[in-house]
Length: 107
Length: 119
Image (cartoon, rainbow over all chains, first blue to last red; front, top):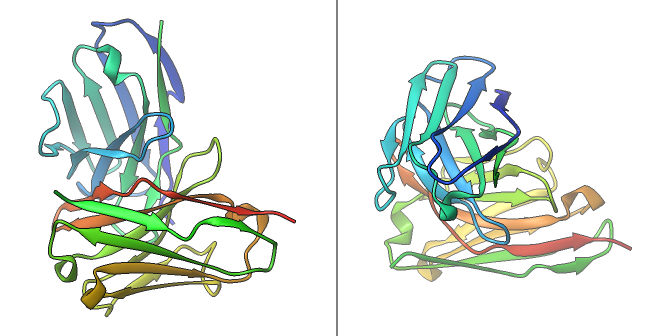
């Protein structure tokens, strides 16, 4: 199985900060990498697919990059509604696997 | 508007069975692969199972293989998860999620249904 490792596991940031979350795959997954946002008590929401493509309706402050084994999610200017937990997920091969999550908290 | 509504969750004893349903609307259900993803309380997301549009291809996580069965009824726009031999570690919120196709993985999710396995 492909292991997905996110870093950091949590971070504290201020409104307006630029935030970067990293996701590493245990083997190459090409660009089959997605990012999701989840708020407490809610279902995950798709943000990014194919490593860098923005899901329809998602604001452009979110961006993704990477290929192979190393990927990043960047939030250009953190807003109050962005405080949530973020997950990466590989869909290169079954079983699909998620990273452990990165909780973004208010500083 | 795409809508996915799960039902069938509840409290069940270890070793028991439960059948989850997911009612889909707002899109041509028969054209999309569908998935179940779960989340144990306070934990991360775990992919459980996937079924292709015509049920030709089915995949399971090792943790549920042999105990869970995914199925669908395209005439009823419904997805199912039959869960047998339930264990305490199966306690989780179960989400159904649509696979967007091509490069798009899980693009729409339901609100989830809670399954609690406890004596």
